[in-house]
Image (tube, rainbow, N blue to C red; front, side):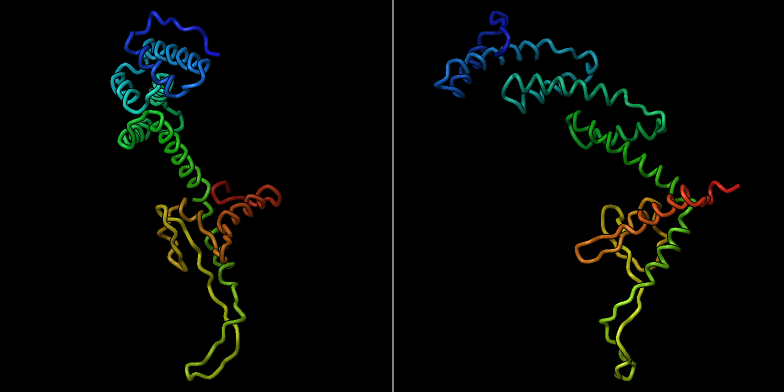
Length: 245
């Protein structure tokens, strides 16, 4: 049951519209109608009393969105409250581990992606997570990149298919089976790219995505090798190149 509403504080035309919608939604249920009317009246009051002190510069935009996209005052009030909070969070986001110019650029970019601040806030959080992932991956992979590539190369070249039939240049049967270099698939700019050689052009964060594809299965070879190196460090005394004396 909704708390009591001060109907005298609600403009007549607003209250009339609320009552009309209540009858349309619950034509045969008087109790539900009354609950809806009370809820909407309270939501209207909350909408009117919303504190925009943390989002004064964008008040008109937020109010316009709420009136355009939502019919009920409950949804409008909820949207406005969410947008004010999101705007304030975006404005105050300044992580110590990310340069100010990088954060500023992120905020400029997200502002062009969506009009709603709640969605911009989600985009900003993803951008921050992405930046940290790339930075941390580069720090982690950089010193052992050559080792990872060499280890994967050894594994990749140890592939053999006994069902392949080989023939000499004269067309004569020359035995069954063939050794070959297994291709690695990398994710570059969101697109899967199969490679046999030429890994030098890959960034550290692209390299670490490398995997072997076996039918419907995938083996994340570079992530697995990273785990092997971490195990060698913790259990067998292996020292990474970046921490050698």
